[in-house]
Length: 154
Image (cartoon, one colour):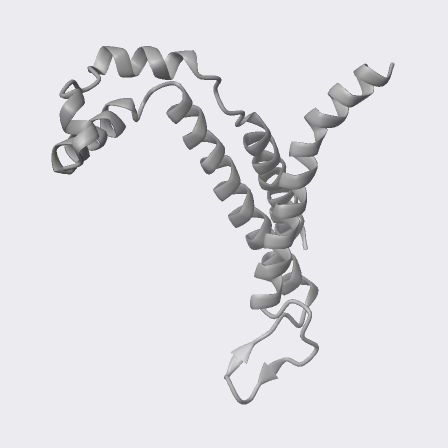
């Protein structure tokens, strides 16, 4: 039973950390947009703050949508990268840097890794997990969608 709980506990840590990071980013956006400011207009900076419930729902929706979209896009980028979309670009950059290294150990070897060998080596490595970012990001986008529906029903 202890082994089973540790396996599930480790799996959910990624989700909890991503959710906490997303909520911190939402709080930062809310702070930057003046969500918690009580006054209607700051005379020193001439910026308006959220004064009505409609403004608060709009700012909340924007914050959740921005964070959710960025998290889901970053997770999708990791998905594409883990399936080899950037392998050619990474290999070409590594090959280009090989030409500009003038250390004796690289010159003595004299043989660069071919693209086929690079792909085989890359396929043998374990893939990094990415799905938790997509799921948490889509969860934030879902919250933003609910807030948009609430915004238009007010």
